[in-house]
Image (cartoon, rainbow, N blue to C red; front, side, top):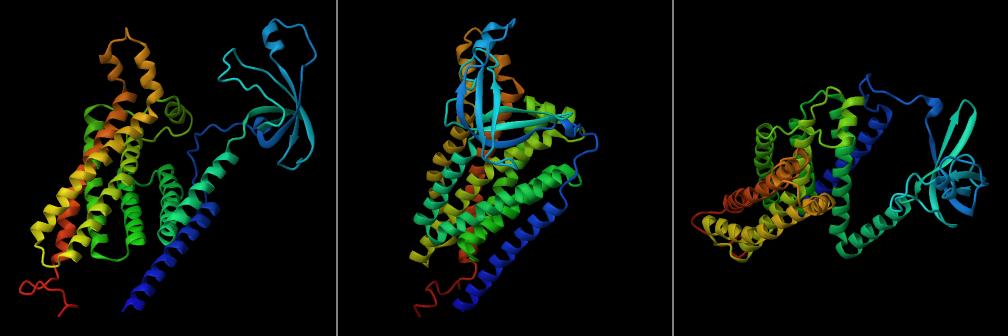
Length: 397
């Protein structure tokens, strides 16, 4: 029986991996078509980006200019390309500071690894330093994360890595293309994607058990409650989702028909999904351990234990959500704090601020509702097949 269960589990994981691979291949072969109204940059001015290393810094030849300060701050940079068709060749670029802000400006030094933009305008090729290279260090940090996960988690770490990759793949390869195609309502699509991620995550990590299905249904219930609150809040508070320059630019130039209120809804649900899953599996696993330790425990007592466990989890997990959103919004909070003469009413009433408040509160409320839902469903699953007249486990008889 154990061998048969293990076989089914391996077949299930293989089908998931096969589905992810086929989805990636299909997406690569048929990328989503953006609206025909999208404004594309003409090919002859579209820059190409390559990696390069700063070899030498020189002062550019002095030329009379109305902006003497700009001329004095310029750098004549000798760069060695480290990627692209001209890898290994040396180029020269005039790098100018755009303003007097040292935080924004790049003061290049020999040995710096940068990204250069190559533009070909009617045969006139020009190289400009675009930014520092940051991705190599991101890869290092990602490697540390994966290594730590595998060394400490071992088998569970491998499963955790799989479900993380699966969730990212589902969002990037299914959800985003479907949003761009516009064939499915975004709220329904978001809920379906959340349910899919929940099912695959919980079954992969915990196996095909009663506690797993309790956690799955508890997560779905918590997400459903957060969805209702998010939809009502967006409607009542007249949130548009067009509170940032990126959203306005995206709406004006590319996605004219996209409902950005639905994008706000999707971001709220996806932001809360991880914490809700964490709470659900913590409660269901704890209830299973209690039931194994005391097989004769009643369904009501098991449910009460789940509520007590959930109360302890609730404080820390709600705090986690609130602090995560506050941390991402800290620069704006500091900006408001230094403007002491500003009236708080219009400041707190800004769509951008209210959206973040709604994001934190609806996610937290959904998390709180997950506790009794998970406790009730898991308690039922763990006791439903138990004989009423004989509470002693079968293996003891």
